[in-house]
Amino acid sequence: MPTKDHRRHARVLVEELESRVHAGPPVGETEIRAAREFLQQNDFSTASDYFNRLLQIQNRMGTRPTPAFQAKRNYGGEAAGYWMQVQSIYDHIIVSTCHDGEFNSQKGRVKVSHRFNQAGRIDFVELKFLRSLQPCLNGAIRKLLTVCGYQNQRKDWHEAEAFALRVLPRELVFLHGELFRFPRNEVLAWLINIGHWIAEHLLVDLNSHRVNGCAAGENGENGNANQLHLRALLADQVARPILEQAGRLVSAVEPGDPESVIVRYSRK
Image 1 (cartoon, rainbow, N blue to C red):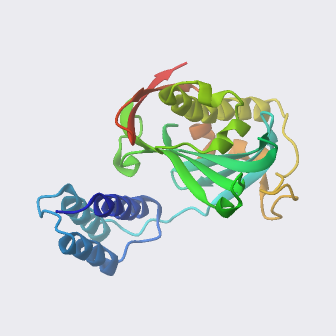
Image 2 (image 1 turned 180 degrees about the vertical axis):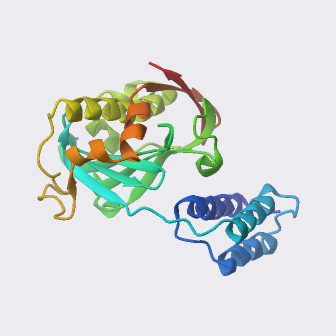
């Protein structure tokens, strides 16, 4: 009988391979074989969905031509009241904003990233500790919320189960000082919706030419010299449609067990 840790590792392992089927780099036969051996060694039933998903990955890699992946494009600038970074690749975007703050006389800084799929739905919300209230966490990354199997979901889904971090980082007070006074499901919904709000207001600022310079770096330095100006997003055939769709959506979150919730979408 697989342990809880084995099941969690299997989920992450298979989801990562499924993601690479869509976005690259290509999955190798040895990786599929190694994943199957992990399942067998840890007593997963051959009827387990994980074996079936590995077979689907193998079939896709055997029948699909190697896709001509678009190069990842990295944009930076100031818009919607934030210094931000937008990464555009293949069929999704990642919108990141940095937030400074103070808690109990300690200063800190975090980067919050929202990954949106082709239809503007959230794939995950992630936090990176740039300067944590606990120095040992500096540089660490936490997935605050991840839609289950987002690589295989319908792109325009309206309801989905999501994994949510059991204990949310204190550093989220940098985004909203009263955040932890609200019920957990409302906090998670707000974390999703702030990404949609940023997408909406980024487009407004782009269309009205209210964007500045190249983005400040994660620690406040000048941006990456290879970073494109945010203005160029208007010509990005992947990013612009996603931003337009994300800006028209709003989510609600229903509580589930300690590690999962239900995310529902509606239009504004």
